[in-house]
Image (cartoon, rainbow, N blue to C red; front, top):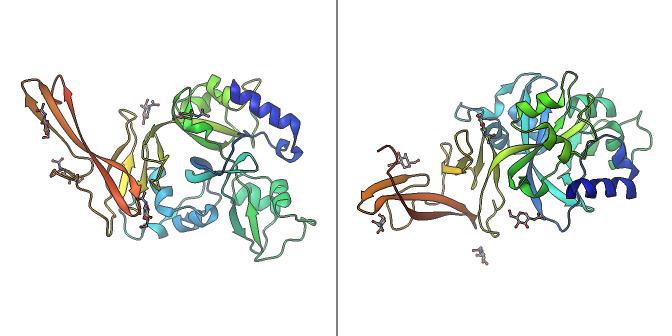
Length: 322
Ligand SMILES: *[C@@H]1O[C@H](CO)[C@@H](O)[C@H](O)[C@H]1NC(C)=O
Ligand SMILES: *[C@@H]1O[C@H](CO)[C@@H](O)[C@H](O)[C@H]1NC(C)=O
Ligand SMILES: *[C@@H]1O[C@H](CO)[C@@H](O)[C@H](O)[C@H]1NC(C)=O
Ligand SMILES: *[C@@H]1O[C@H](CO)[C@@H](O)[C@H](O)[C@H]1NC(C)=O
Ligand SMILES: *[C@@H]1O[C@H](CO)[C@@H](O)[C@H](O)[C@H]1NC(C)=O
């Protein structure tokens, strides 16, 4: 309820530009960034690297967020088919008191119009008017080829929680055949949740509306000074961290973040837990008279180019698999 109030207050108090398309406005303060996802449907066949360039995202991070195999050779030149739906990981920043994706840039090509850039190339995540305003374009009919346009994209984080559980928010462009119950079912959330998050009075949507969809996720608890502090991974996907050295997966069985050495790792700092022969992700168990002694080596974040590892032991009533 609190965020609904905030959103309405903001809508009524200022910034007529933001009322153009229905999208969620999240107030924020300071200059913190958080992890969010943009829902994007490919308008044509594109290489992984081309999609990454459109959003200034890490190509490997795009693939892992969508559980696409990254072990195939020359994966960045792999062609993704037109119509494919992708979740693009983005850093959501706080600017002028509102959450916004770190603005991406687009270099115009012959035959581009503001409408084609907005609706096709960026899949409706931005409107032609928003591009016009963000770039102070006075005559939208004439756009020079090779112009570097700022493309503002919507994102929200809401403290990376939903109903007090870890969640990562997907900015989703409603398609022609979508209904809110179908969207809720597809993303393992509820109609009530989607309505609350988006401050909707009724569960009706139109094609082109942008919804914030909370996806159940696994949270991390890396220290503040870790460069991947706040890492959050949606259920059923994985993320790559620590300069491509560590991969962290989430679900489907439980929502505990599970990190292991990444298969594509090039040269990485040690991933072995100190005072043990365990590697990141290893778990061993030992039956003792008091119960089962479970020892695990887990990932603790990326600090100054070093992979932090945490060795912990817990006594459980029974050993797994016994
Ligand atoms: C955000 O979540 C953290 C714990 O994950 C909590 O300590 C903090 O109070 C929350 N902040 C807000 C503004 O809800
Ligand atoms: C996570 O995803 C799996 C399917 O991949 C699903 O069965 C499970 O219910 C999801 N968990 C949550 C908490 O949504
Ligand atoms: C420990 O982790 C490494 C790297 O993921 C893996 O290759 C190895 O099989 C694991 N060993 C045990 C005992 O689980
Ligand atoms: C559990 O295992 C750890 C590491 O092997 C060891 O240091 C600890 O003493 C063990 N605890 C018990 C109760 O056996
Ligand atoms: C990272 O390295 C710099 C320079 O070596 C040092 O000043 C800083 O304290 C380090 N930060 C952490 C968190 O270790």
